Image (cartoon, rainbow, N blue to C red):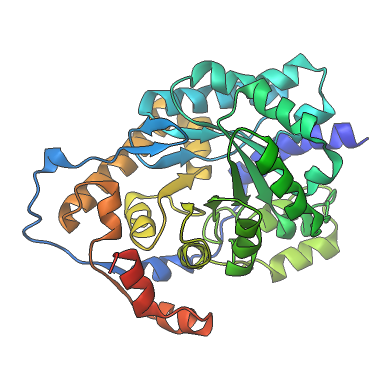
Length: 373
């Protein structure tokens, strides 16, 4: 039964992430090392003047961080979402829920519904982002979407695109047709909240962003190929066949790395809000991601691992460390506010220069554009 599979899948995904090495191979470290922030011995600001706050979806956040979509849909995930909501509320960060498809399947099951509703009940003072798969839109009418949004009182709805994961997943749904962009354009006209286009770990390209920007979308979460690799997550599931497991190994590096995806997305959608996620697991990567074109950053796996393998305090300290390290790096670059990170001098080394030129982006013009010159 599909109902039983999707309910079990939510728990199995968590178990795989906690017990197997499902991160992308460490090819992104060198990419982030090739983004040079210029140290300022005379930053011309006081440390206490540094302000990480941003406005997002009608809220003022203490830092430009989203606790990304993780889970929900199984009664055992209630406590997880409850603690994640507490973290978001206590630290003043945005938060997203996992795919809400189980809400549609178990529409009359209060135990399932409350695993999502608990997030808003606790995190009343920060943005809450709903979540549904792009392929699932084929099965839903506008009333379904409105119900998903209103039931959890979401401030935005993420439409996640995950063709690579679906291609390996035993229950994979590969319906990624042109009709999806038409449906998204219709939703934007009729819903009173914004939509966010979100990958799940293989990155957004200029072509994908251009199509969906043309449909009216103005918020993109790149979720690049630097963090959790959902192709590998599916490889380790019990129902995955040996053939699919072998293909998963073949595609272990598939995708657009996060910093490159940020640049591609900014080049294709200069008027949009861009969220850098996918391995942005420390303050230096967060600051560099913003400096090259993102507005915010998002992360998931390290938080849930700290939470489940250690405790709430450990997860909180991890997030606090990211925030404080961002503050120190901003001080050392002379950036008083988050928007100032788009103005500080940066240098892009190879492979960026060759990559951008190959993709039709002039590296010097791109940097000048970011710096407003």
